Length: 253
Ligand code: NDP
Image (cartoon, rainbow, N blue to C red):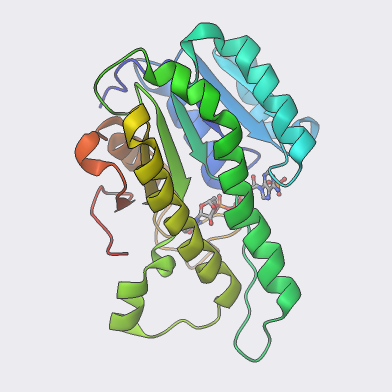
């Protein structure tokens, strides 16, 4: 599936896992975006990402710790120089953390740590990139990642409705609550940014074998990532404000 004319895409948390997989896939799809901006906390330590740079001139690697206000400010300035008046087409808020905690073991610190990364930081990053997304949105009329989009990488475990159906897996208090709150951010952004033409969704990437997903996960990156890019490439106005999975199926909130 082609990516249309998505000129620029920025992904957070690209040192490993799904973020790295998305970067690899964007770089090898046709047509390749003019610019794939891969951000991570420690570029010098992100060896696989650095290796990609040797073969892909469309790749830029920038430092971004989504918890650090100064780091966010700096990366926005750097991206502004890179994208110019064309703006940024697609922001993928992928970086995230997990920590297992049951009702018995969960602490306030667990809750706040995960909330800060998986929820607050995602909003702050989106907010900081709005001017560049708005620039890009002005240049097209049809919603999609070729125009302007914010993709919040969420999780199926955040679904309240699925929880009421299954009522299990209670080991992830901090994580699932942080992602449910992230989903509300998607809803609020979708309401606020419809007039700008910036498409916003929450995306469940599938349960994938990564450091976070663990070895029991049924999906390999090589299976899920191309499917995710198909979903992204086909996003249109009808999907604005939706919660989708890696196959493009709607997940109930
Ligand atoms: P990994 O743990 O493999 O990778 C997480 C990535 O996020 C790393 O690149 C990490 O960087 C980065 N990161 C964490 N904190 C920060 C920060 N403060 N600033 C910048 N980057 C940060 O996770 P996955 O690749 O599996 O997950 C990616 C996303 O997908 C997450 O949002 C996760 O919640 C979601 N997800 C994953 C599922 C799965 O099965 N794998 C299922 C559902 C959702 P560093 O290397 O520096 O630590």
